[in-house]
Length: 414
Image (cartoon, rainbow, N blue to C red; front, side, top):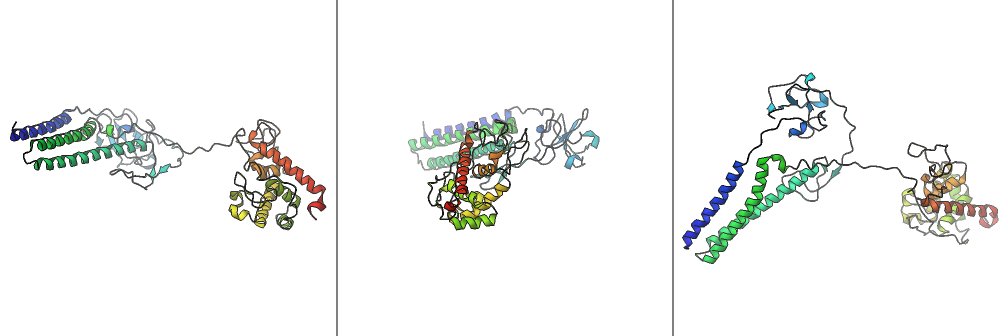
């Protein structure tokens, strides 16, 4: 076949492909507008109106039968003349008609405003609201909007790539200089690029022609779930600090006496208790750090003392902060009784009994909640609570050291 004939055939094929695409798109049946039954049928931007009473969807209030219009009201349910109304049968906006206040249902009682859930995209999708670093409030339709934006983005990329390939094929076609092989390669490349463009853009146009909603993915609606704060369960609760950092060997008993006496006087608590807590917690090691991150002689968590772990390794600082914290627990070791943590048989924790303050120093005040598994006991006292086994042992250890100090004052306070 001569080169001239091949060129004619190439252009004929090109024209036929384009013509088929145009005829196919134009011949697709356009569905008639279905009767409007809810506000979801109208493409209103969220925020234009309040919640409606026909379906609970955001957009508008629906009028009472036998009226023929679906109307969007003004703020707080007050009907405004400028509000939009739509004919239920045709779906067209009716600009010359306004309804009286009685034509719309009374505004529903709006639910309390939920906490907004937001996120920031890491990449920008051109032509959409998804811009890198810009905060977006998540709504029920955000997922569908994102899928739609990704789809349109890839259709655009496919169109650009196909166009570039056609341009490159055109250059090859022009510079083929009558070479049949180069001419054939250029022709094949241009046709392949056109087919790719037809498949990507054509599919999008077909869906858009059938129903624009098909490329908006509105049905992919996921309602964001707000953070749920679940109350602590007795069966899963654990001691805040866990096991002490080091066991006391019975040595180093008088090294920090001056610091302890000063801190006890400032906090107005028994210095014997401070020393007992210190020995049980760290064994008298100022550099001790527990597995839970408690630091220093009194094994304070940085979050509790509002100090860094390094600062808490200073003996004077640690003992002063520990004594102050211990004093608050001695004064009030009991957590509040509420609906989540009831005491059916009355409060078990007793501020006049030192063991509850000792337990709170290790396990937090939550250790003194009333137990439902073991009536008449607290969480840490109930042996069914494995998470407070350390606290039970801790109370016993501190009580034993405290008794030794009280029985031998000249040894522990020379």
